[in-house]
Image: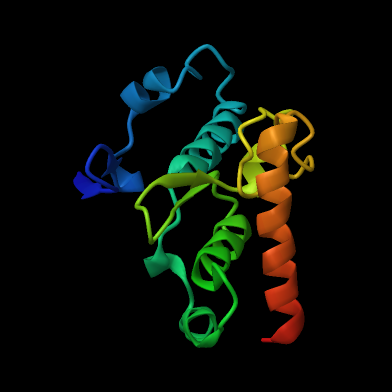
Length: 152
């Protein structure tokens, strides 16, 4: 059993597959299934657990990291981490500037707009109050102008 610290509040326990037992099957809630259904259900649970592990800057490939650092676009490094988190089908990533966990579009697409002006809202911020929405639109326009000037 290995334990990996994800951040100051979370840890991930890693158990080698050879050490898995029926006690893990019971803990995951698949004990009532027929034996042939258990591997499918366990795979679904594992994928769900993998999605809960936030992506970090360490997950970037070397070429992605180099391109993001070289870029002069606003939030280029954060966007590179977001793209990598989406590639890995992760629900969140750790923002390198603030250290906060940030939802990815993968996670947000499974829910309606919450109205909190999420950075990667796939719904166009439809439930964000109009006064807050003006600030969001202004920031998006500034990013679009900067992006038009530079290419990767």
